[in-house]
Length: 294
Length: 298
Image (tube, rainbow over all chains, first blue to last red; front, top):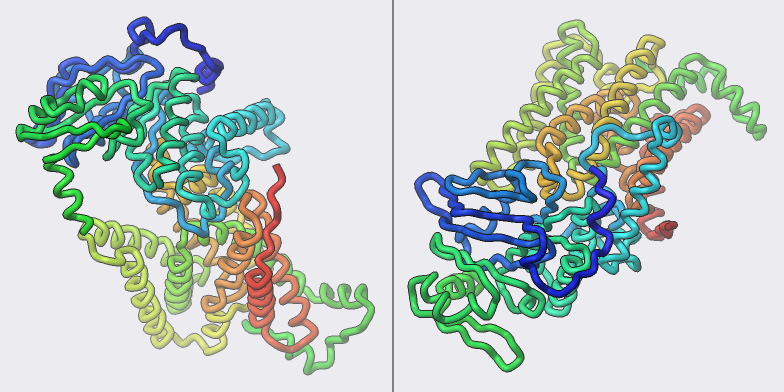
């Protein structure tokens, strides 16, 4: 499971994704559940180090897309190739951060322990410190501790990694969870609404961190989001899912009145504010979304 | 058989002195006291370790239910002339599957408070069943009293062997599942995504808990079981956020309460269970009041 390279920095020459390794490739992919079509005709090539936001209304199949990549759901049509191989369950090259609530305030475990469980939390048995020397387990334990420290520093969580996780803020917890996802040195990072429970400042901080990780370590990131604005300055491309259709491209190309009106099959206005934020008006999803909250 | 130290005190056999060595010699002079310390220590180690995970997972209610189910199992076994420990284990394991099945059902049916309701229902039914068995049987009051409040001073050599076997099994089982169990207890969603079988671990843990409860009942009884299962773990989790240190501290505290309870009860003719629970309670209150937290060392 150890891959010596991966997380070591590989500086980029230029910014041409075309020259880089293709990590995820969908060809004419479609998923059905029962007789309901979730999405179809998905053609998507994602390069190493790309940061892509997956957008769309509830029920458009954003989480379904992540499940397909994790090997939890099969494609009904088309092909998916992950690092040149078909999708499969338990692929160590993929890390997944599910949608979540925060930890209970009395959770009496350090952030460092949480990150460490990313390495050995799925291993049975308990290595006894005295006995593990016999098969070199102490060397691996030291290496694991070093890796944990490395990712904690990478996400900037050194100051609070030894405090009980329940006492930390939502942003601090999210950074430690990202560290946990990175500790296995994945090639692909799947994040399901990681900014949901954060305030604006933390949304920007975590988004910048994700951008930095994807660039410096060539990790491909697919991030499911409700609101594109906090991640907008950092994105390479967006994948928009709606009514079984898909649109892929740069945010400027996809989040337009024309494309969204076509996707939703209803007139939609996309407004751009002076500070670069996007406001989607006439968005069917936004209406129901607010109705739930008031 | 129920023995209390007050019998010895009445017979004028307990001599407290200000010489600690003489006291220690006297404490271990009787075979039943040696057995009590041996059994108490083994049970405290298991209860301290299991308690850590039980408190972390918020399953104290399940632990208490398994104790009550154990009461029904023990009294049922006594009715049929079998071993109370075996009865407790069989009933405990049956209850685990009952709770698991019922809470799975209630979750799917979206009944509010699913698991708590399922556990509470199982618990009450078990107590009722225990009452029936006690009524049907001819077991004398002392036997029931021992079941409810513990009878650590009446532990035989054969009991020691049974306790050693079950304690060893429980600890080995816990060590085998410790890391995935910790992962699933802290963050079930991410653990499941990593391929940890969360539901299976819950079942395995509850079965181990049934083992631990069947052992702990022999020292502190059904009603006082939290003194060994919950309080040491709750104190440890207040003091340190390092899992290994917390498990060690929880075991150490459980051993400490048991030893202190046994020693004091030998010289003062009040029940062992009272002293064990008193030491546990006093320590818990002290820790809560001072909120000491060991600074983690990096």
